[in-house]
Length: 135
Image: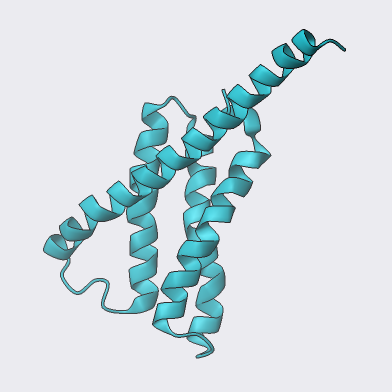
């Protein structure tokens, strides 16, 4: 294989990886925007809704999923892709609610670990359908 042919095959792969990473970053930003914009709205409409940590993390996951889902739809993704990615917002918290309710985990740990686990959950969804996110 010549140097020229190696460069031409490496370029599309590099482009796909760069696009994949950019798309991931865009979704994280959209989640943050959803959380920052919808958080104050929820406080105005339903004050005290998030007083309980278990309810609060699920409402926050919803705010993030709405922001991210809106961005994904704007970028042309299917409803199926939006639903799969939205699930990656909820699943870490749902798993962590069991030890939280059992008293083995505090509110801070629930919030922190839910957000930490959300990031690899998003990456896993993206890796299941690379063509959806690297085009």
